[in-house]
Image (cartoon, rainbow, N blue to C red; front, top):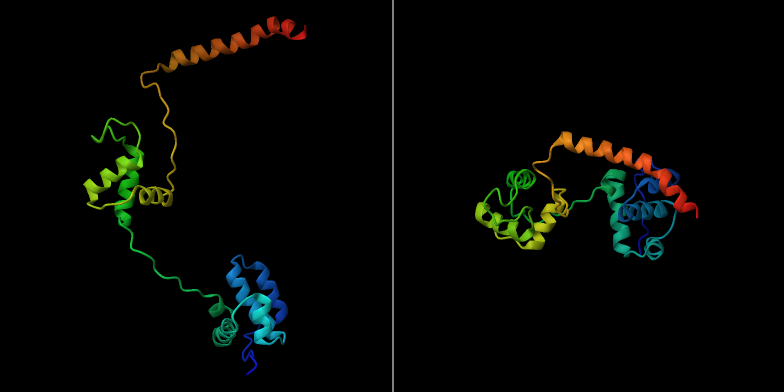
Length: 187
């Protein structure tokens, strides 16, 4: 079996590679650097593979990547593009603005005062002609950095002056009534 060799170290030494390993957060990428460093230190490919719980071909592949393009090529990972989203970015932004600025009742969707996935499912089907599952909508809302909160009642016709007067009155009551209650607490 042919021994793996580092043909071009690109200015890296085992010591500098070890320092680089400590900086890398991704465990898979750190493992790649570790495999190259161990080969550079003189270990056999099959020994490196058993130490790192890898396949021997993976170690050989990492060494060839490093020889070809250095650490940059070794750490470059190409991810598949993934599935195309149901809604375009413009539609997602439009939906987010709708959720943030309007209630379903204002738009004629049910009498609800807050959005939920069931109402959003109907809204998306009607406006964008897209069928999405409720779980898909929940994940979409999460990606848009929207979170579910319990709706609370707000007094729409509250008088700000009366509220401030009430708060002042409550503060006075709290300050003056403590002396009465202190005697009850001490007994």
